[in-house]
Image (tube, rainbow, N blue to C red; front, side):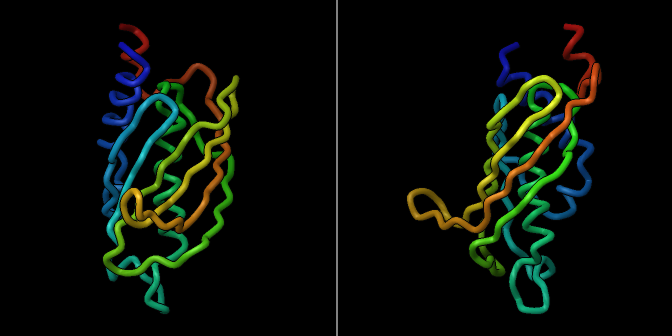
Length: 149
């Protein structure tokens, strides 16, 4: 099994149990070793009192992409913290994509950068930048059977 195939198998298992991402209407676009992309369409019930995407839901999109990227090697990994900088507002109907990339994976810690954009290449607009810090749990796997095959 290649690292990208393992990443997909892990993502499929995670997605099946990820009620939060599903309830928010997130979509798993792509996952590979150390990377993941999720998308969402901003709906009226995602917006705050100003009619813009609630910052917590923007963070949830980025955090979900981060989770899929940092667990892609099948080592059970949890967030130890994150920061997010919001540079533009998102509105109802906007299509957002969060792309997570491993910047450092070593031992039990990792650092991942996530960009959230609106639109499609080449007309993407940056919405937010997220940096997540992760901790791998010793000797635990997302899908234990993958390690036995």
